[in-house]
Length: 200
Image 1 (cartoon, helix red, strand yellow):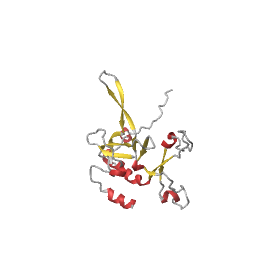
Image 2 (cartoon, helix red, strand yellow; image 1 turned 135 degrees about the vertical axis):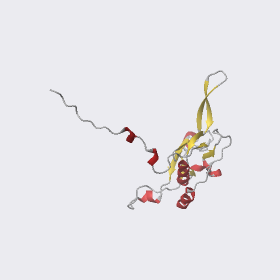
Image 3 (tube, helix red, strand yellow; image 1 turned 180 degrees about the vertical axis):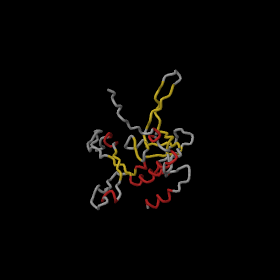
Image 4 (cartoon, helix red, strand yellow; image 1 turned 60 degrees about the vertical axis):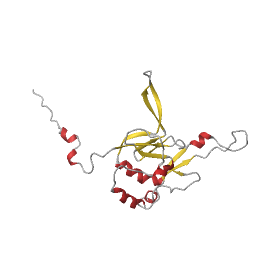
């Protein structure tokens, strides 16, 4: 007696990949290199925001004169794939980004009787994102998140972050924080005016 072969279902393989010609919106975003990171005095070793990584130091692996591989510390990092979406997200989030330093342990540590605190504790910092009114109340008007309450020592994260266009793809030599220099994009952005209207 001949056994019947069970029927199968086949999904056309061409439907299992993106249809590049019919996707809505921008498909290939222009990418630019930026030198970015946090300053040496930042209470945090890094800040991750808007899809970008802002480290204090990164190690670059290179070969020395003897042919050995060595790790060389570099300030910040060079990200060669920063897009306009990253930039606009950064513009939108920075006005609500705060670093809160941990309170130092109040105990004399130098024999003078002066409360100078624990340097390790003092160095810690907590990243706080100030919630919007909608995030606090929610769609139904019921409180969802606690409102932000400023405390002594709270500082804008932009005072510790730098974001510098690096057309040569190399680390820079002079840090200017975002609080000092602002944010600069190497082409005109039409959406920025609308975004500024939302922020103000």
